[in-house]
Length: 319
Ligand SMILES: Cc1cc2nc3c(=O)[nH]c(=O)nc-3n(C[C@H](O)[C@H](O)[C@H](O)COP(=O)(O)OP(=O)(O)OC[C@H]3O[C@@H](n4cnc5c(N)ncnc54)[C@H](O)[C@@H]3O)c2cc1C
Image (tube, rainbow, N blue to C red; front, side):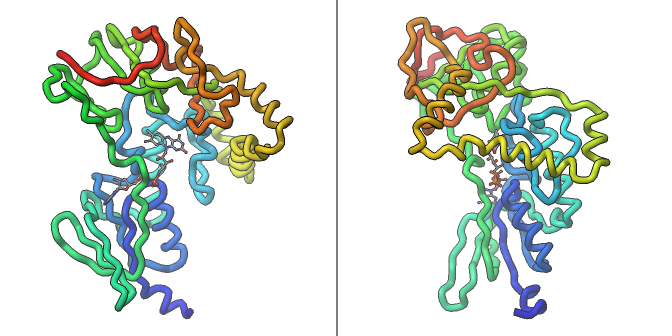
């Protein structure tokens, strides 16, 4: 295919998170300039734009959580904060020249493939229709917060919101607060607000495994070294990636290796230890489908909880 033919391809990308931006950058690099990134939110960043709850941060080391072609050297800590990740994505979109092609506040409501022309018709929320040769769906899987239809929610007198739609206008200082769920977001929110609220209840249906995050602040000297020493940022990225994938190197049929991993995972602890110990789902957490959580500090989820007996599901709200 000649370079002229390549540049004539038009592409629609849905979503301006990590995935959509990466796709746009790759198109730019391949001289495909006729593309539009449709984003229903008011800016780029995806989940890192939307989720700004207290304590929001990366839960994998930041050197691994950045584009391999745009390594970041300025993380303030090993696990970058939400604000830093959002700023990194905004900066990268501008630097790589894709920002002007992002149409924000524009939701795609339908995409139809036309067999005859071999093209895609996308429909915008305002009814506008556009045709493209290619379609890249980068809508993510966590961009539509879901609040379960709880009995009593409509009449509940207190404020309530999803962690992905944190309401900054609500001052929780000195308030009685309940957090429903004890997953990756709760494990960050609880330590961040525990000292501010009057009472904190964490409602969890089943336990998670929590390991130490080994987070640490980066210092200006190490950041300068990463910036200036050729290859150091790349070496750090590769080393962290290797470290992350280490457990995957032990196949399931390697029983001895798995046993060693299990011994290692004893360092993990359940997110909430009830008075009467609950039988945890599996002695070998690396086999459990639930992902491990990581948090700094001695007792991340139950920092202050007032539901000491076991695991409950929330059914009804009153008040
Ligand atoms: C709070 C939180 C913390 C996380 N932390 C980590 C972590 O530490 N490490 C890790 O590996 N992963 C983490 N994740 C997972 C994270 O979802 C992925 O790592 C990654 O950021 C997903 O990027 P994405 O581009 O695929 O999707 P998203 O970031 O979800 O972006 C999708 C975008 O598509 C837009 N969109 C969706 N539908 C439409 C439509 N119809 N029309 C127009 N626009 C649309 C959305 O508004 C959104 O901006 C976290 C997720 C959350 C929610």
